[in-house]
Image (tube, rainbow, N blue to C red; front, top):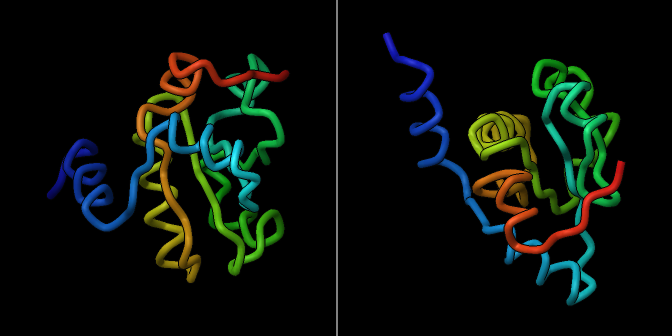
Length: 118
């Protein structure tokens, strides 16, 4: 049996993580990518990254294909980077080949000076 912490650590070994600063720079360069917020509704309602698509982690497997095409580059984030790591790993298993998790989540985004809408 594995703990939740072990599942997250295993997922992080299979995915790529990027920093909030990396995502800010991707935007500044005009790169084309989707941003997916996998937090719960109440968290989303408190504020989110501009242009993000909301697909709560609990509904990811059933909703992501309708929200973001598999061929699209995707940055996934949550509050601190754990749920997004699990989500990125799940999306990788579903055939998304260019998906990354934003380490540190929305907290690192705010710390890096990123804008919030909501």
